Length: 231
Image 1 (tube, rainbow, N blue to C red):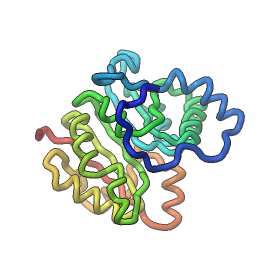
Image 2: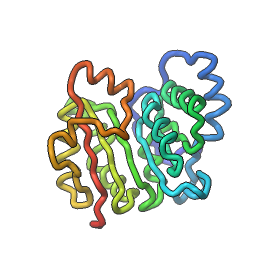
Image 3: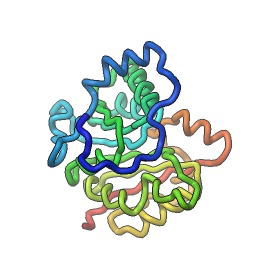
Image 4: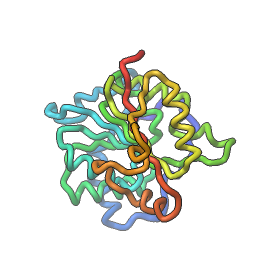
């Protein structure tokens, strides 16, 4: 993988428990052909990532165990899916889901999502998912959140006009933080018309194990924003 010339501080886990032999085999054999290498200069040639028949390009940042990404890939074969997750065990889990469902329209970046986003072309993404990301609940750590003033600028750049940004969290302070950032930005429009629109998970938004754990305690919020045609 080509490494960015200037490394950012990274906060989070890279690996957990030792992989079982089957998962390690997938990492060794399947991951290299799906991994995205960043160019030394310029932007990623997204047209070269997938078959030309792919009509849309979707991105999930922090796909966790990969259940959601694999489901979306299987149910939307017309869309090329980019998944970003630096946690090796999560990458191995996604590979197992893809082996099971046979989806061929997924590519993986297993490093810092900010570097990937920086390398994506303007107006290239049709849908962006940020689901149950680490809320970094301590106030001094809020700047580490994957939704912040800096990253919102980047997301606005890569999203096409009319594209969706889907965000979910069980941490209500993070939900309020995200709402404040995006509803006060004219480039994004919150689609909710009634409470049910953000309290109930849509049918095309499959549950993940991280969400299942959260539902055992706190409630979750499901937010959808549209990228407007404002500059």
